[in-house]
Length: 492
Ligand code: HEM
Ligand SMILES: *[C@@H]1O[C@H](CO)[C@@H](O)[C@H](O)[C@H]1NC(C)=O
Ligand SMILES: CC(=O)N[C@H]1CO[C@H](CO)[C@@H](O)[C@@H]1O
Image: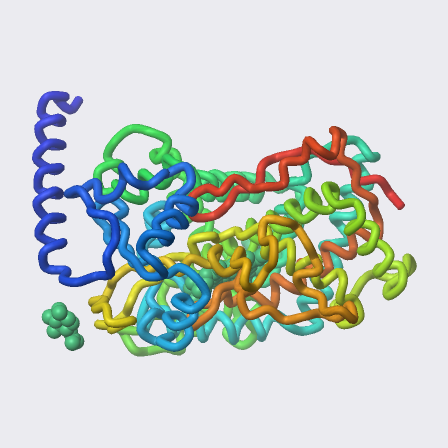
């Protein structure tokens, strides 16, 4: 047993050292863009609403303009607000802003390894390898299209099994969507009842919800201390370990049956690349393999399934939109064959609806944190190497200059007066620049095929009154979490 007095002393000593270090750091950091005055160690914690960081940041932008600095606990973060600032940084100075910032919850798991949460040379090599290998396994081609069609057919069968009773669609959707990326990473889909698979999905959901919660925001600021304290973060730390162990097991299984001449999946291709690279400082090693595979599993599951789940809710709230999508499906695809991706070219209305769902969902309102990978001058400010940066994607997706009445759900945002699809340069749900979502093509194909296949087979029914549909995801921390709800799928 640890003596509690001793523990308290140690904690206090720890805290005072941290305060001193953070005061010292602020001194040497030099001139970052202006912003609210931070307290030592706790930074702007008292001025920011951890229940709704996005709104706090929007308020601050009214006072400080498009480029300012906030302190999340001891961490200074440069905020880029609005189209011009975000584009100038992420596109015009793409290389400088190509690093990945910290996010404590995910960092507990990834620790700077794997494609999503690494920076510099490591990120560059893993990103190139990941994109090429996904393509080798059919992403962007007929191969993956067939896989999605097959999974969508399983989903339809499962939904038919509900007999029109109200259900919570969350796990139906996440199991199906996750299986698309699974069959690329592992070479096989999981059975919908597979216990291990369900437990992985469950733990991943817990981690995502924690990262978005006020507690997650707190952990993000003060993880250096909180990881030693009791609290919900301990469950998350445990989950991350289990997810890592799960992936290590999967890799070992495949390693023992590896055929160097015929890779069966992403893991095999990575294993082969490890053997080919003789350079001891190579980025192709076990840790990066495990973490990159976990990145794909994470990034490829929740995002698309939450978008679909949110889309259903919005369609129930806007029955006129649902009716028009049904009409377009009837005209272009009909009832007798499965939708294929090619159909999207003839279905501008459905495409506009999917875009509007992505815009309205605004899943990563603060963007996924970036950092500068070298000393950078930006709009007259000096951002030293490793300065954290939040490109506030939500400020583009809700900019009234680009989307009149941004708070309304309106597919017309993406249609011209001839009913054709219209581009909009502030439409950046997948971000922009060197680290933009590398799964954007896959995501779009999945969204189109799942969406149309389900709507071809079902009408939606909300068991409560339409007015009771709360179609605004809580504007929480890093990602927005769509509230749970139940609905019925009525066969057509
Ligand atoms: C609706 C679906 C999706 C949305 C809204 C979305 C959004 C995003 C955003 C905003 C980023 C941050 C980019 C940046 O920092 O500039 C990102 C990164 C990423 N996404 Fe997606 N994504 C989606 C689906 C997917 C899918 C299906 C995959 C599977 C392959 C995927 C894989 C990734 C990866 C690996 C990264 C990290 C890229 C890097 O750091 O270089 N995403 N995504
Ligand atoms: C970056 O800036 C820091 C602090 O101003 C300076 O000490 C360092 O030498 C610079 N690094 C490079 C590579 O210019
Ligand atoms: C042949 C082989 O061992 N491949 C396996 C790789 O791992 C996945 C997931 O465990 C299995 O489904 C494959 O059969």
